[in-house]
Length: 408
Image 1 (cartoon, rainbow, N blue to C red):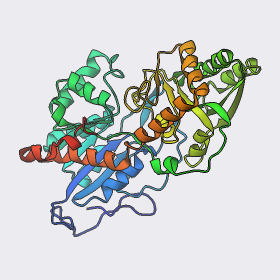
Image 2 (cartoon, rainbow, N blue to C red; image 1 turned 90 degrees about the horizontal axis):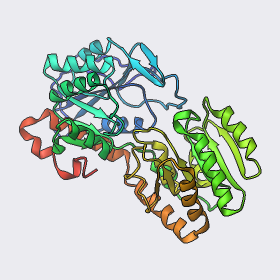
Image 3 (cartoon, one colour; image 1 turned 90 degrees about the vertical axis):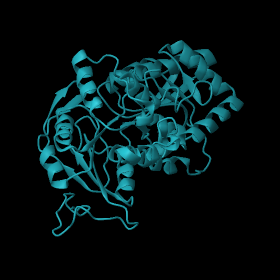
């Protein structure tokens, strides 16, 4: 048995504890272990909620404290957790973790169910431990049927092997369910744990302020996020409306100098400002300072920045290469889902910027849709999947529509 944590953020053992402890309601305590790369701010509150649920004892095992390409400001972790000894190799923007000490961490904790969030060696060690010990295994993915199309035959064989020996499945989106179904997984075995943000910080009523910028781009300023495309959309919108437009870039990255140089060449049509990296507490005001969020990503399994923009009541124009497309961002409702054609994007932008009634309708819908993605729902979906995996004889009790992927 573990204490929640000490002031060093390391788990400490407690002698004399029994594995057959019970929750205050008399339910057997189920020990859940989650293995994941590092602590992203949008998952930390989910783990905190699970850690306080009756009948659940949680341990989150992190492969590293923070991957090198992240600038997240991680708050104190108020749930059972442990950091493994960092050991990874870099492949482009990806980090392949190889922490053999995950096995000893699992052995000390003695979980009833193990959730793995990928297929790095660390996760496969954890899956192998579950298989060897007869422990329920639950894969969890932010991926979609689109994001995994280009996987090699070898990668797909590994997934088939793991999925055939797993009891329940967790997806972040409908695209994740389609991914599982492509491997023959029945929909009733899939559960939703959505990606979300602290909506309260964005949905809270703020003083009405005049919008300073027509557009905002928020994210890493790197090729995969397509910041130059956003600048070109602003340029084309200026041409079509016959006036100068403004765009705010929030973030930093390898393409920042190039984007700045291009913006300088377009200064007569586009006023571009660069804020740099912003902390979580700064983001709500930054989003509210703009009218439209541009999200021209080349590949995002979801795109939490869209949650932030929608909660701040911004219409969103997004590429079809983001998981939010068609789910959180609905074409013609709170935004537009468009192929990467700057002229098409600029036409939609001009419509929103010149038709106040249309703009207000889209803004209100963004706010309403964002409110449906909550930490509580994400935590409930994750725990429901684990309970289904643990209690095979009573699976139908937990596989209710409200807890399934379709029910959110």
